[in-house]
Length: 494
Ligand SMILES: [Zn+2]
Image (cartoon, rainbow, N blue to C red):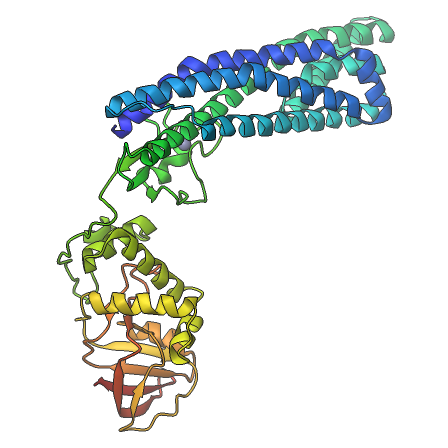
């Protein structure tokens, strides 16, 4: 299925189903408003909060609403979608409503019931506490102003209450100026303000109902699709190597917030950038996932000649497209498969090891090699060494490596770097790592090692080249660069 098909299907599902669910929420809130009495709200104002029994009652109401209204609708919608998806792929039909999907509906439903109960408690308590500080209205009037806010978010409830309060004060002023007694003006103003507020809160309720329905259904749809795909993989219906591509909405309801995610590809077990497992990324998000059925992970990608730029590093535009500043992990795995002719699993392990080396595990990986330890860091070191061995050799000329402390080398001495070493084709980068009065190794015509500029998090900034722990060098010259305040140690590869 193309991205357009996937998005069209999600849109059709939301357009067909979400007005029904929104209507259910809207009616539910009407029932909840009717079931709490003004006397109960007046008591809450005196107590400073809504009673525990009332909150428990709301929780039970929402739970049964979720079980009897929300769950059947979601279940039916997902089942229809799953059938259509499978029919489209022409595969055999397994039971689309797997246990995992049922579990999702139950868990998400319970979460939702709890969330909206607590939001409701907080919103109403906020108004109840404000009401206790007001001395221009009777407790009964306050209760009447608060009750319509049941079902609104805190922010909406505040807006609806403020709306009421503003109208009430305006009317009161108007009536008193027109000669009405203060008492009569207050009663009439409260009544009219309440009538005006009813229209306003009804609009807010509809808006919130639509938002919850759309978001929850998008959530259910995307999780349902995911479960269908995972089920299909388990049943051998789809190849086991599947990747997920984020697709933002296709029509005028384009999702502007998710623009940066559009087209991003991740593995089945990886999150999208920002730690997002699946759409929706936010309320109102109409994004979907396109599943890409790819290569057999056991199959090696043939090694290809990746063009090399003038500065000696692999052409990142060729590997990742023009002007990409940061390649995603899936793209780096792909690039590694092409560069060394590896299968997907091995390439992924190498990319992970190299990432760890250039981030947190630099010291531990080198120490494991230097001290010949047998631990997880040694395993990473071995993967990096294998990568260096298989990847094309560095052909870009001089390399630099900066260290802050004096290695105490003498001219003529044969040395190694005590582990996988990190170099740069830029002297400025080595200067940065050596710090003021530090030491910079320079190898004029380096041929050992391989560029990881295209794999690094600092792509096209550090111009990094890594070299094997086995490399040996002869010290040919040592001198001080007065201007840069660095000691330069010239080496040749042996
Ligand atoms: Zn979105």
